[in-house]
Length: 459
View 1 (cartoon, helix red, strand yellow):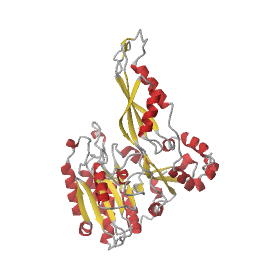
View 2 (cartoon, rainbow, N blue to C red; view 1 turned 60 degrees about the vertical axis):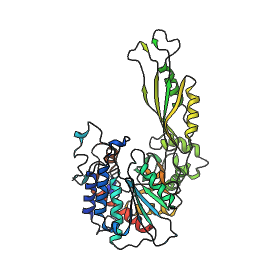
View 3 (cartoon, rainbow, N blue to C red; view 1 turned 90 degrees about the vertical axis):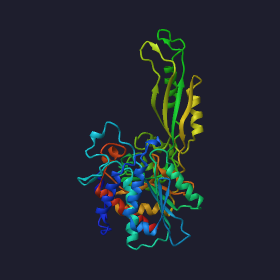
């Protein structure tokens, strides 16, 4: 699937200053806003510089909007004329992940060069997610410069540390709640475009994330006497851990077809031409188990219906083959489906691990709330995306990675996660958090068209 073949209506907004939009993203990438769990490593002067650039680049926004800094996060508000309409919030984050040490020489262009070459803008943040941050600013500036009057109040919110702890988005959401703001919808990063092959469908599928799976790291600990391996009468800590890990992996939690999955199947039904789903989706309730079996058999679909289990770390083994280990630890990573709580997961794992292995969470966050997709905002986003991309069906889905959007669930029941910068899948897979991150100028400008139209039609 060549994603660029799916672009349509690229002639619209011909007066958009694409050259300036590219230049602004290029310059934003040059500003190294890397975030770290150890905040002492963060160069906050870089964030200050980005803020100065934003205020210089977007005079119409500075003229017509309220611009507020909350710590090093940004909240921009354009007041709408109709107070009966709940505001919309477009968001992104300013920070980027570090460049992996030792990979610097593998970059074709320096990771913070912002080079524009070969039809691409290169550097850390071009796909995650400065293209959306700058794209939203470009879109709002364009509408204001063209004299658009806003009926619905519109916010832009740019957190400072999404890649680590998300305190910026939490602070913005708290500020809005304290001021009595309830949002009509939120649009944040996320989503994906995939072939419909796993469904037996003859069309591409665009997944709009309506909730996020949770995250948990479970630490298993086992103790044993150690000693010479010739007398393993009492067993070993490694053996205990192996049994506990196997028991947990072999006893997955329940599979559930969420409301968004059911809606996805309903939308895709006319396009499913083959396979077991073709007949099954005619009556989802009656064929629920058959559909679950289909999801379980496909790597593209499997993780959508249950909490995933992945043993990832083990430590404390012996340095010699004939010496039994004593203290050992292992970590299992879980991505929690909304039907599972962290408390329930811990109880489940402790029972399976047995009395000789201790189980406790290092970190545990449950899935976010499932947002509503029966809303005008969701249908508007579908319509706008269909206006700019052909041969794709857009459906509600689960976001498999964490975003700042979950911070706004207390003031919004429609948090949508979909970045409209549809890039080649190989470039996206390798570039997000990886080496040679880049976005094509074509994808970037097409995404801005989507944002302009979404703002215009809903606000």
